[in-house]
Image (cartoon, rainbow over all chains, first blue to last red; front, side):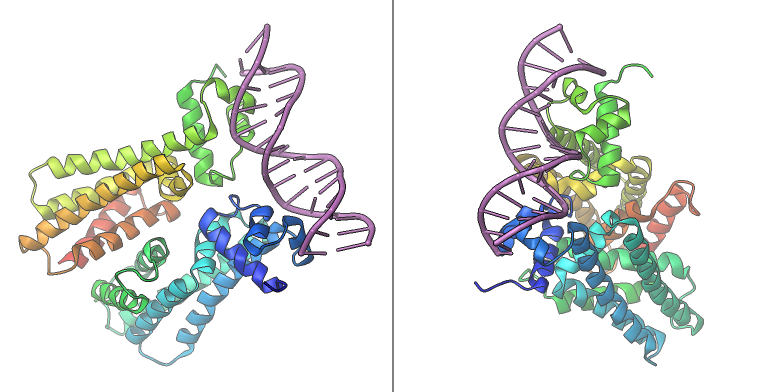
Length: 188
Length: 188
DNA sequence: CCTACCGATCGGTAGG
DNA sequence: CCTACCGATCGGTAGG
């Protein structure tokens, strides 16, 4: 094995934070995962907290970038909702470590970083909510409370990180399409 | 403040495990929460792990007892689904600490205890699935995959622990009824 | 990236 | 329930 890059360290941190939790992972655990000593990690990063910040930020960025892309498009609300869902599932299933760390460990972030992540999550939710509200206004969806609907939709989508396993009975795409069908049925 | 009972210790453990996580809670933290030293806790319990086992078990028992009660009744499947949902939300909203610890920290249980909890959760899911399957068979619900539907329904219900706050804009009962309405719409 | 540490904190025990 | 500890482990640093 050759020498490790900073990115290798962050990626390994995501893996361990996702499976053992931030507080359940020691710097020595992380070193072992990479074949080096815990103390050697400090030539790549300043602190354990910094690793958490970066992994969570990566997760948040993936979701936000995707939502911005969909929101900027000119598709009708119905199509946008489908794209939002498909993208969300794709991100979770292909970036499980960052997604799980973002969804489960963000609460352990230091105050400043946590505030920033909460703001991003709120903006992400707002994107869903706005598109759903537009669909209601356009008459494509039935009358309903867009805020509550958004929470419920994201609950189902986020829970996928809890039960999805690559190589399981359903592919990531199948799950995405099942989620789209499920949500569309609820919206109309 | 008078002397603490073993039950006080378990309850306080639930509070801290729910908010800081199992690995983010030290026995000294827990002692402080109760106004005594960490070492004094060992006159009430054998280990920190034992506390986790008990809190998670309490959570699991609440859900399971409720599901068994509904399943044993002779109401039609449609009514049973509503009762299962209402009870689930009521347990989460009135036992937030045990519910959060059960839902978020069970993965940190020692192997033997975790296996038992996973088995209980599977049985709980099976109760939902069976009632939904009965509803489909009876023609009350549309044709669908009961296993996938159950996962999605429980995803929405379990996520309530993440956003419900007592004294918020919606009462626990209102949330329960909103969940029943949402799920019923999806089932039919 | 390792050697060799540091002070702080961890879960837990003996004895009262 | 406290006093007084224990060995192990924690995040992190200095110096090479």
